[in-house]
Length: 326
Ligand code: SF4
Image (cartoon, rainbow, N blue to C red; front, top):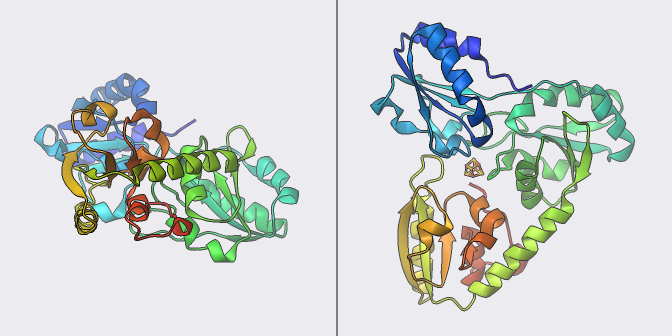
């Protein structure tokens, strides 16, 4: 279903004259690591190194690959333009192209007149088709351009819905093409318009309002419980696409000005185990904002995003709660 473009990778390795290549796969594709490794080594003669580290996005790009291999193939994510362009790195976005005519057509009576289209990278190539179908049935359709972390019009990352905010004022609702909750939730956190999610494979249509509201209630509880905190650990991530050192230093400055005791820590993999030794009242996570938002129950102390920390410090009103977009 998802195109791994093995022939294109083989041609790229051959044309580049690479004798060794590292492959980086998200968790869902690691099951296919052996198959991919076999194909690439058989068809190119190159040594293949499977990178076993967790990989959740192009923010995890293994920039040190050249210590071990000539080139890197990163699967499952699009490039993040602000991270630069390395000609020895190939991104395989694992796109899928199901037929969406029937599913999108059936939505027409159920959706408002002005619609914004969004998608994960796997389905971003369906946006022009969905636009054509909807416009052909009388809808007005908008597709937003994102900021420097976004590769394609309409694309949403779990930490960035700038393609949605760019057109929020023009639309009555958004239609999101994708599977699962993770990416649609980013848009649901980031915009105040209704969001309809269409699974392009199954044709299932659903709202994620309940999930969003449940998570936001937990976020308000985390902010509330951090209100009395006196000591904070500000987490900075060493990953290329999650490092926000400048923002971390700004948070630290504001916390010190508010009389808080503050520590700064650098981590790549943020988990309950990696934080358990540090005796503080609360964490502020400047890395992937979804760690705090989606996984907070795993941590023994409140973990705040940057914008949530501003509420704790009294620098932002509760009514101005906003998604900590990277
Ligand atoms: S920072 Fe988090 S949400 Fe953003 S791309 Fe990386 S893993 Fe995904």
